[in-house]
Image (cartoon, rainbow, N blue to C red; front, top):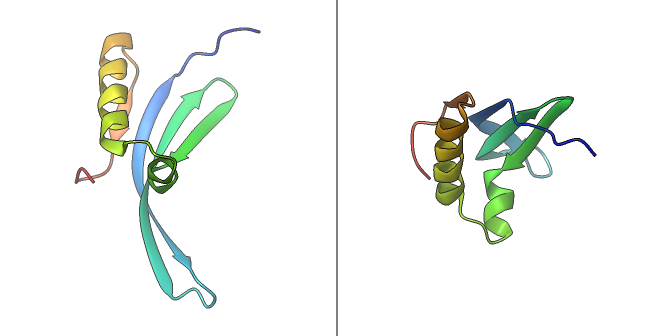
Amino acid sequence: MAKQQITGFEIRPIREKSGVFGRKKVEDQILRMDIPGGSVFIRRSTLVEAGGNWVKLKRKITRLSEEKDIPFTDYTLDEW
């Protein structure tokens, strides 16, 4: 199996409606990793529920993008 390389990172805020009647508004953040042939998405809430640390992941991705010269864009203003 060939090794796939990450071609870009992007973090964006997302807003969704949930609940029975769609009245509950949910805000979250999403990480998108671009790879040849598609993208991989990781939601902040899913990572935290699984026991991960969102801030630590953002730091690791920032360092990786600097080391490997991978484009990284963060559209969020705050560090949750």
